[in-house]
Length: 347
Image (cartoon, rainbow, N blue to C red; front, side, top):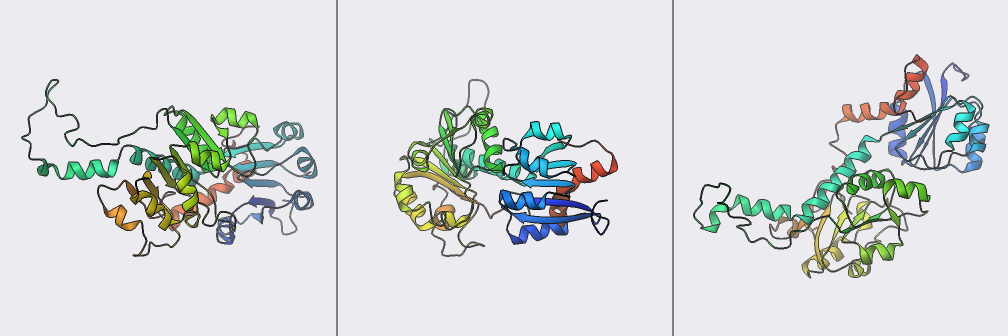
């Protein structure tokens, strides 16, 4: 025990808002004294690290040799997520500090949901399902199928695409973007482009199979544009009529970032004009969806390639399961204290 009250000191670095910071504190085990800081400067970290026994770092944020040297009591550096390019692993190893990279379940689920959206749009899934459910409308006599008897594409559905050999652009690249890129690679796209405030180092790009591009290049060259941008003053309404007009004709927009990044009225206009081939959104400017949302008529039209889901990409909001996931933030801390093997250890 190293705290004045006999509890183990934990420093939790995060990018979460106040609501999620409070949830992380509420989930902390009683034997831990947890301090949560949001986007601290290097100077603030150097001031806070002495005496800290466990450092939990969420998302990216450099942990360099100087910080590790300042943390003289540090036993474990826990990265919540899979991106560790910004941690000086050599310095941690030399100092005898364990390092683990814990997969973020919610990020993985959102990445899976975005992949679902991508495939559903490319394959025109909504229209396919509507056609199959209205089979009696086709009036063709059915024949029992065998290897030589079938009615391939009896709906004569047009515009069915694939992700194969297409360019996918990802706007906003954190844990969700990384998990999405890993899943996209197996579908053999032509390119995966990404944009964030600071490019990743070349080794991280090579590992993920991605290439950095400016926002304008991604918009102009991508067949599928995925919005994973968080909300900020700079991103508020960023994907507007101008950006949508700059997208490739026949491209698709997928949005699972902040809902207020997308100008929904401008998107509806671009879809009705036929400039875009489809859109799938999981987040919205106003939630729950207002009845006057301009995308709702398109989502209700079985022939419009527009899919809306109710901000559920990371899973249903079940309090008990959410608390379980939050407690996992501290699982390796408890394992180390109990003398059990660490999970997802990389150093």
